[in-house]
Length: 412
Image 1 (cartoon, rainbow, N blue to C red):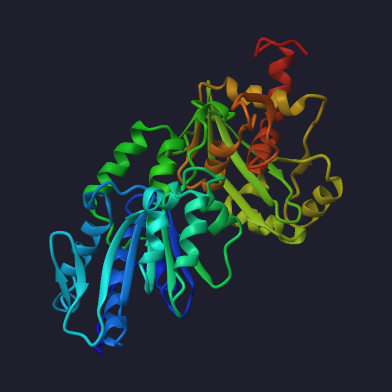
Image 2 (cartoon, rainbow, N blue to C red):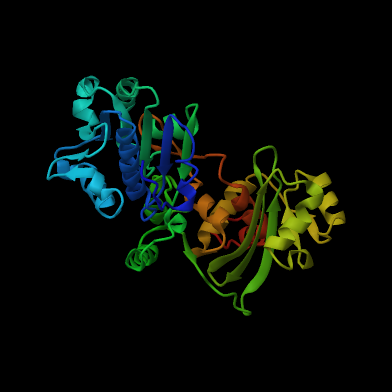
């Protein structure tokens, strides 16, 4: 068997190292996941044929109306670009198969929606690679998986997530099967990310809403923008702090169990709120909170920071361990709703590019949506809100002052 080098994005090396029944990658555009998996199907085909095995590499998508809609072009391109692999494959207009080896592996291409019933006839599947798997139905998964039953056979999955409750997400992320190796990979993990694609990414960053951009380039779910609490009210930018801005204002929210401790720093410039720094950490010990936050937000201890008043003991402890100006925020009946209205009263909230936690929460913090009707309900989902809570605490004096003076059109 030929010994040769295969170049993969570093994040995918563990996916293809060692035995596994399931291998997969999900993420956004430009991650090189599709080309990498196409290449590895050819490596697997070569290895199997060199060992004298015969069988099929099945490449499936939910819909394949023609070979142009299949993974065939990616397979061809990956093989032809790899000098040591190309001599071992016979590549035609409509087929790919190994040649010159003791065994023989043929590629087959199928649309799962309409051809899943015929998969049982495709005997000896060595690998089933399902690309663009976000749209694959639960029925298709249930029919496909038992057909991949050869000893040592594998199922590979690649997709760009869209719905948090899709059958693919439920099967491979929420409750991943045993013996699986699945990672998230994005353009930032691709060492060969081309400049021309980066220009497109930057154009999308400038023209698209943050939710759509995150879906395309960061592998995030596509959220119903009408349900997002801060839809149309925020953007991401790499700004510099202007000395004329008011602030800094700082707030923090303590984490419990799997919830993160979150701290933020922000500034106000007229009708704009700028979030300049953040600190997020799970399972952070209270006596280490001050040091961690100071590392992420330099000079944090020098200014007042407002923390959840439901945890007075925690505030006292961090005050004694490096955060002497930590204090409890004011709370009142309806303070959450008042705080959200105040934040939404800004023309825009500008989140610095380094504040990934706040950026994710701004995108995910949403009103509940009725499961059957799809109607947006007035109740906010109690999730993805620790940094946003810290942001509310940071500006809580202005919230009360704003209501007192009728700033938001409401008199307390």
